[in-house]
Length: 366
Image (cartoon, rainbow, N blue to C red; front, side, top):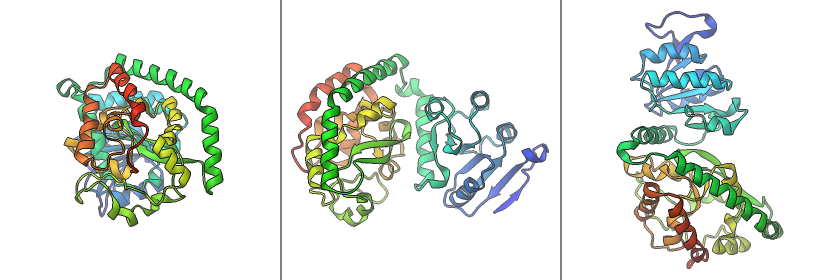
């Protein structure tokens, strides 16, 4: 990795010096890293072809003014300071770079919820433990921001009153359901523990609205380390896709599912812990299903990105129309997600929830 002073950048104090890195690449995109973490720099050097590096936000502004056409993603790896982030957001707006994704490294995180709500930050990840295609993530986040910024033309504007009423409804209903269903959840937890060794809950990173990554909760229905057997079972996948297209994974009579797990899946009781995701604000009661990251990373092109404009949900159009039917195609599933993203509102959510009970009992084991 070659390091040097960027041309035409005014000299600054040594502690605020600016560097440029040219790297043998995996990704042709250019990052702008703000921070001094050597582990983060090592990760970026292994993932990108070119990058700009500044020690702090103040120094970064100098270089950004001169490289607005070069930057594909901005990565913040500095201690959280709300005033500084507010000023940086205003700066990016002034140089017309609001469409550039901004990712925050969670090693400095103290108040995740407050940071996630900040208009500057598009996602929070652990740079040193990221295991997925970074270029796909950046591509998606950029498209999502472009959709949001051109919302009047695309009719995808996030209506604050609509979002507020949906969130209030989610909190009230999820709280009531958790109180009513707590005894049942305790019984399910005991049954899982008695049948097989391993954790009671299945926790995994999923991609929700705007490709936001969060920890997704379910009752464990499979044997431990089931995710590691996906490649070995790929030939049984009910979804047929080419190597470059979108990918979903689901098989009939999955051998990884336990006996208790099969009952929980067929009755949808494995979904109950997601009520806590709803309370946290990761999900809504109604929305598009949050996807495993290996699936979400294949849906970053223009024709697919729209499905991520809707909140992640426990139930949705896919559940009431096609859940449990093995003949569903990838295009059909994505089409249902996009349809919901375009017209969701509280009344539409009521309509979907009213039809959810009939879909809870699956017709086939998929």
